[in-house]
Each structure stands twice: as structure tokens, then as C-alpha cells.
Length: 257
Image 1 (tube, rainbow, N blue to C red):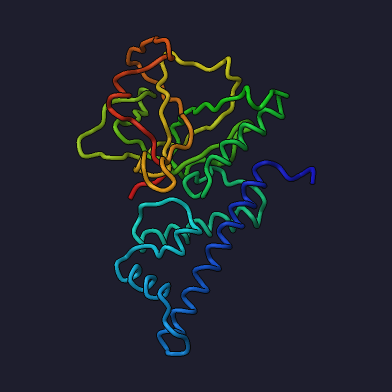
Image 2 (tube, rainbow, N blue to C red):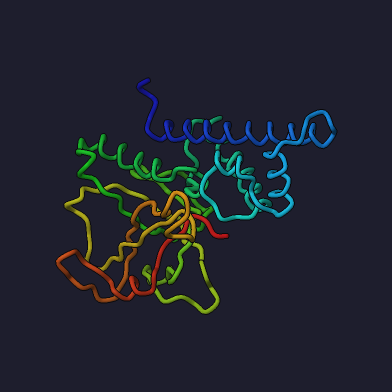
């Protein structure tokens, strides 16, 4: 349909994935209850599920249908309930929240791509010539009153290895004992690749979890965000780099444990 925008396609995909996960949880818990009552034989899968739940770990059959996470079972289940609330509100109104909880999507790259698609269509740009650009606002996560005319407001991100200074609007050294401070609401935009600004910005990788490499599937990289910095940049054959933040391993996380 003509009114099926890329954002609604993302919402539909997220709802489908969540429904599959909830069905899996409901069925496995029902079977486990029958097994404990003696109505069913306790299978190996049920035994592994009980062991995982006893150890506060996410059962493998649930994790297979869910998103990548390093959370324990109690924290993860609260996360599931919060995602359900967000998706229900979004699907009931078919209107994107004033600021989207990007970490509450199982496939955040799909939403990032949707932002690029909507902008590229509006300006008749070729999609492969468009890149993302992040403009950091001064708003806290609950202060957005509505989505902007272009791009999208997203929140739920944390920064590791540095901090974002709201007074100077730039990247600064971490404060002692602040391991992963919250980022303000981010205005996610799409711009032509030829207009991309490199000097005065740090290309900050955004990761889904704190485990940046390894795991299954390996790596949790999502996209690059641009953070303003006054640190000197170095031009090399391979691009423009801010060695201070690269050596500090500065990255943005969608989830903390």
C-alpha cells in the first residue's frame, strides 16, 4: 500500500519477531508446567530450560528467537515487557513515538536504513549515495514532544570510553567511575555522502552490546555515529582519524548489562 512507509515496515517486522518470541515463551512454560505436574515426560529441552532459569540465564530456545543480549534472565524479562509496551503503543496508533527507543528494536540497523530510505525518497537521492549523520540534542530521553520533519529522534544509547558534554556540545574525557553514561536524545539524519563532515568529528561506532567482537554471530557493530570533538584530527591515506578517541576505544552502546 502507498501508506506503508519504511518506518511502518520496521514496526511490522519488530511486532512479528516479538510475537514469535512470546509464543515460544508461552508454549515452553506451559509444557514445563505440565512436565512438573506429571502430565508430560520431562524432556532434555525442559531440563535445560529449568537449569537455565534456576541459574538466572535466558533459556537457549528463547534466546534463539530473541535479540542479542548479555543480560541475566530477570533483567532481560523486564526488557521484554518494556519492548512490548513500546510496540503496542506504536502499532495501535501507527505513529512513531516522539523519540524511538532504538535499543528496543531487535534489528536497529533496519530502522537506520528506514531513515535513509525516507530521506532519499524525499530528495530523490540514490540510496547508495546516502550516509547517516547524528546530531546530538540537549534533550533527555523523555523530553521529546514529537518527531522532527526530517530524520528521527532516537534514545536509549550509552557512551563508553568518554562522555558527552552538554555544555560544550562535544566529546570529553570520562568522569571517574562513570562507566557508560547516558547519551541525550540523538537526531538521526541521512545526508549525501559527499557532504559528510570529517574534520571536527569522531566517527563513533555504535554497538548492540558491550561485547564488540566475538560471540555468535560475531561482532555487534550497527552503524557509525558522528560526535563533535575539538581534539586534533589526522589525515591519512585511509581517512581522517581522531587518534585520542580511537586509542581510548570510545564507542556507543545500545545496551548495558
